[in-house]
Image 1 (tube, rainbow, N blue to C red):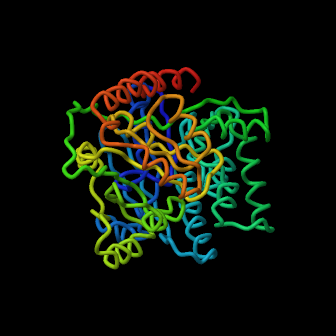
Image 2: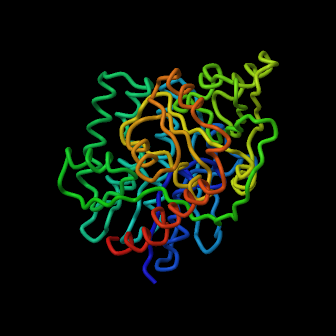
Image 3: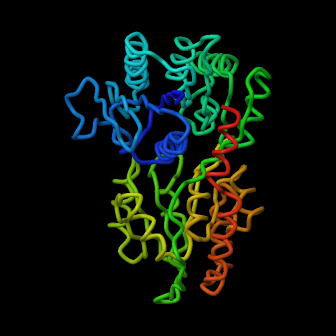
Length: 386
């Protein structure tokens, strides 16, 4: 069986879209390839090495038929740019050491961003005999600029050069959105391009009618509580007249959200913390509507929640603009509010009634997802271009 290696900065037991996406990709490819994964010791999103892995320089296991090599890095989520740079460099150095002492297959999929990590892989693994596949999930550093995490200075220009170098040297680029592929095409025509959405491979639940207990719409957000999602501000801006808002997850804004809830005794606002993905899929079935927000519209970004929640039959209110908005509208998955316009968001919410959120709508959404967001069909198409 041919060998294939996936190099990523995120992998379970870490949570989030990136780790889930790579995990399902690895699982899907193992039927045709001897798949191995190279990833750091788990640390995301806390910035601390998970308890079971502390004190280890590396950790090698085989899980569900996939060989996993976990490498040392200096874990940090510090806002200090030098510490962040050192954290990325530490993983890059571990990768170089790994490349020196291990035989690398002829096919390698590299997750990007982080740009520095993907740049390291491209530099050290380029070969006429090897096919380098870049899996681009975000357009960094442009996304960092839009989020306000980066400034258009000398460092930004260096990152842009790294980005262009990576694209030009790859043999195949997988982009999670059409916007990403269009961006790459503006930089170089060299690599082959393939649209690879973040379709999940999950059990399709049987839907039942949910009775509203008090006439209010039960809205849920589940995921990372980071700057990009803007959940803390969302909690402050929502009109709670006919809704209740439930939050699952963890991240940088977690403490601020807890403080806000404790200071607003009358608002139907609830924080449930972090649960496993399997548990989350069960509890989400008890909600009427989910909201998918982005604090700022990020070019190239399409939240993978769209595809996952559609398979659960969960109607969505999308509040982030861009290609994700188009997917919601074209597939009739729910409602859309103008990005960044909280007044319009509350206006849209007032038009949604419990009667709208019935079993027929949920079944229609789920049936659309089964046909349009088919993981196996997409995977088979990918195998043909690998």
